[in-house]
Image (tube, rainbow, N blue to C red; front, side, top):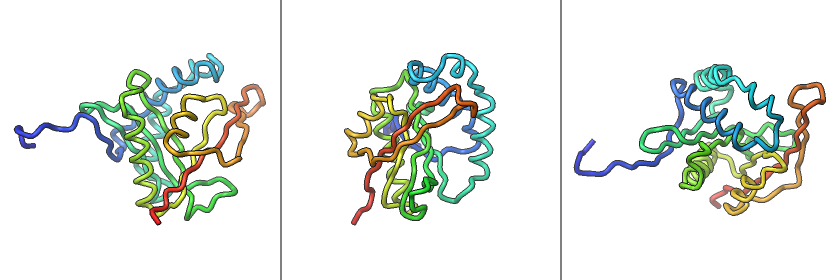
Length: 186
């Protein structure tokens, strides 16, 4: 590095298996703060950061598809955001044309500083480089800040919705809506 040239203090890069703990920490912290009014407190308290880290490490070391990627947003070298991109597996999607952002987390203490926008642009660039022409993302139907962030970035609801049963016993159900945007350069 040339000491006479300033280094960027905000960037996005591909995540490695060694980043699994940082990604899990971001995910748990973001979920606990962002979804405090959406998900039950006991569910959020029970989030297991080590279990998430193990899952991230496995998926980063041996991705299920060559187009599965995890991006890490950095501020002065410290992870402050993460996202995962992959082919969409929705039943009504075309896995060649439709790419999904399946995870998107910004450290709650770092929101409003441009990290989310930078990460979203990097996700779109990554999906486009992988040959996708449309991007989709599912979000909780009551997550108004995320919906606003995406719609201000050109995304729109596509009419798809679903309900997730988080415990498999019907005790905790959450509704989600799908947003999409065209990423075709043509």
